[in-house]
Length: 337
Ligand code: HEM
Image (cartoon, rainbow, N blue to C red; front, top):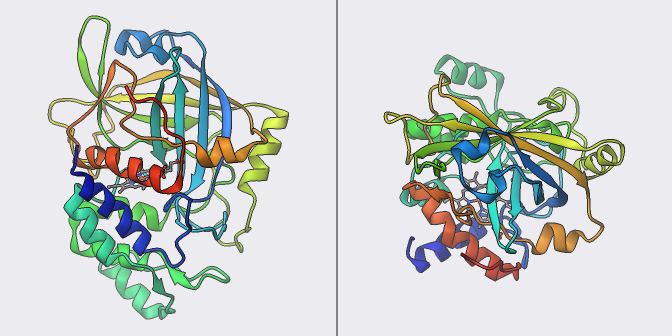
């Protein structure tokens, strides 16, 4: 586990980068909604992992969908990473969490990178970029910054693109962020946990794996050429669930010895074995969003026996950083294993 002072600094640099920090709320993924449902593991899941939620019995689940930006300005139609944090409620009252975003790879490898990134990627005032400069960017294989949305005064991408232009390892993640767009629905995006975890099977075999959620409704973004709508994601999901549940498949990719096991900036080859671990069925948006969406606190290292963290330094750092943030905003503790 990283030093407690490092965990505090990690949260503080995020807060320092916000134009308007919001007390008692998450410093990133500030706007979100809580949803309830059930997870049922597939028949094969238990042969790969002994964790309770993979034993085939239905498990209650709490999910928080979110927009990635920090702050209370809600522009659902803006291009932004979206989050899906999931708690599997286990029979002894404990939980196993899985935190994922629409980003396939992260943009930094370790804590030092993160601090440097935070220094470079501060929000900037928008400056319009002339067409010939954009053409010049494309010729040099650089992603040109996009035009601002109506009412958008600060540029969230410019600093990150500048960082990626200096660091090869950051390019995959940062370029994805720059082009990510806005989903039609929280239920029409795929979400990736980016880190490697180790799972243990009933015969004691340990495998390195990466998890992601695939929406059964399919992935669909809004039309990026029209003026983005302001607020629709909460109502859309609420109305959707009144008619029919929203489903996601939990996919688990199995890594091999040569794969990047401790580096969330590196993808694995597309030929790796993928196992369908189960289906999440979301049915309800609870009225009490303060409890379901705000006070609830997730941690990527809160894991059921049978799942372990890898040596990924970002994953290790998140253990303490999320606890610091939870305490700062008065989020609910959950019994720790
Ligand atoms: C060093 C790297 C990172 C730091 C310092 C960091 C920090 C934070 C903090 C402080 C929070 C608020 C936690 C709370 O108050 O409960 C948060 C939330 C979140 N983070 Fe990270 N994070 C990092 C990496 C990542 C990565 C790699 C992912 C992608 C899987 C991610 C996805 C999320 C999501 C989805 C949330 C919202 C969770 C919720 O709805 O409660 N973060 N992050």
